[in-house]
Image: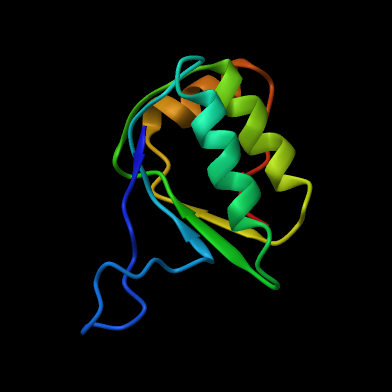
Length: 100
């Protein structure tokens, strides 16, 4: 898993937006440690945070567990949820959205 920095200033694209996470690639048991670290950094920020999952290729239950745990913070907006991820959530019995 890599994360795509989101520019806060067009002149400084290397600067990351501390309130936005955009993982790229797989979110499986093999990447879950890095994903957890990214989520912890995300929630250090005050207020609403966002996560864009549109560039995530594969997700397994380890990553889903982390996302559902992060959802309990009640201040996360999730966008770009693929049909595959939504299907896995539904299969596991989670019908409520990841976003708050």
